[in-house]
Length: 491
Image (cartoon, rainbow, N blue to C red; front, side, top):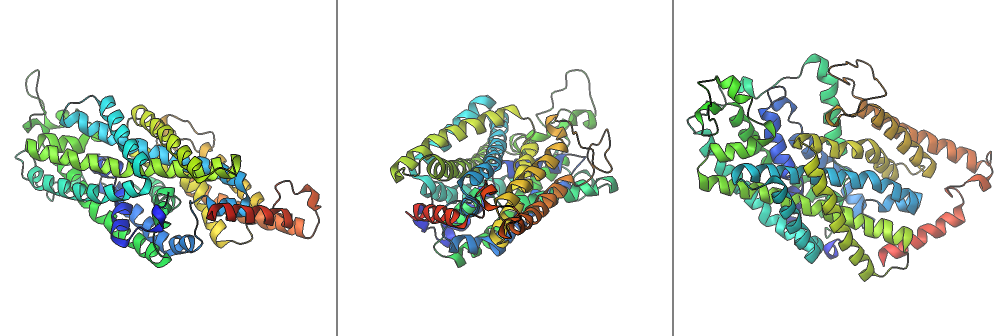
């Protein structure tokens, strides 16, 4: 799970950067640049996740590594008990599934355009390959293949950019900046801020991140690793931004993609047929030579593999260690836990594959994967690390309130209508209030206030300890449970 905590600085930086710079990151960034309703102003993922990695290094990496945790769920189970940790595993698992689904979807779109292979086949085969080598070597195989994959991404995308930019159908991206820069309408400032907070704070509580942090040799190196990866993410986003701008500045009627059936039509009409989710593979296919487009396809494939394997391993590690061992089979041997993790890799891979085939937009999945994590896990992680008075009562209350407010806001991208209409709600544009951030703040406030209230009531015995049904204040029992948990974790 942690490669013996022996991952060095160079390999660690490569694997953490490659984990974030996946197919969803690259294809999704190009997609939003090409979308005339969004553009660069709405391409928040590159700088949002880069800031997230930087904050993670400053606030959490060193502390988590010093305490020698095995997974991100460990501090929750140490403080609140195994069952509450199991409840918090649910949004973590869903986040990993959405993330994997986004990047597998990106690969399916790319392969189907560049070489004409059926989308379902390309996604399934890619998932099987990632599952296979993740099963073989765990974090070792994931980390060292990430080094190769990140080099492939960098070389492949940068090689494609000059060929695409100099194609006869492409006008100057500087002169056509109005097509891809985009703007933030006054009515949507709240939405923009909501997504920015979602990416910055929602990019922190991920097992894929902490798995690399916890595998570092020292706590100091864990912090430096995060800061290095933050810079790496920004650098790797540049070619994706350029490809999106190139796609927006292209007259597609002058490419082999355009095959008029009846007379001539305008470029504006032709652009309707360009699927924004396919813009990166279309630039590779129609604006670069064949050999270059295949190298670009290799770059996208490498990006997908580098993130898919990480998500599968992370979700499976949490299940095997925090759910199977600490809740159901406390006496399970290390070999048994490893085999459970391997079976879980199959399950997570299958679920992510189904997700990628069921949802259309790559960027939708890219946002959804951080949504649940942002609202439910970020405030929980802050409290369990920095708020010593937090307890199980506050944790579960914050979890419920935050999730209720977030679900109540609906999600128009998947056709889920809201049953809570926040201020400035519009029947056409939907929620314009930053309700995700509000849900996170309410969750955080609830954890703090309910924890203080429970502590006051039970410690002063206003409520007798016999009614402490979550065992948060029965000190001798909870202490025994914690000591048993820590002993098993270290073993």
